Length: 122
Image (cartoon, rainbow, N blue to C red; front, side, top):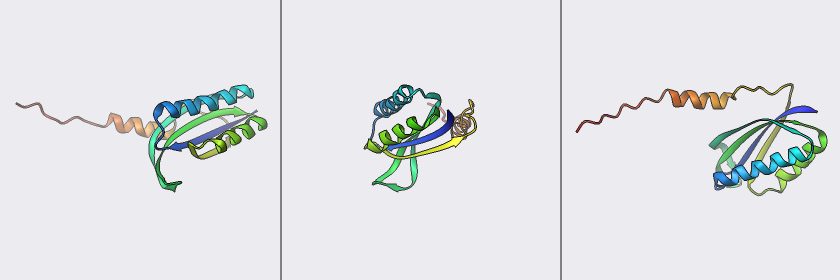
């Protein structure tokens, strides 16, 4: 089996609970085809570079998986059938890093640099 990194973009009007359900369904497909989910990350609701099917934003979800050809075919079929998934990307890699992705690192460093300068003077 080979390692793959997949990014899934889900419509902006889908709730967080539904995003989790979509990803859980994909994880179940991976398990059914003897694949392995090595890493998952939710990157949040992000603005798209260009409008896709009248969507200006999308929920980004990253998955690092170990998969074989039949599994990849089934994932492709499932994502094409889903009306909530507007775009996917699948790239073969040599290994999947256990470290947070650069997007999550940038997000967490932005959160750490926020300083509350409000004053409680009465």
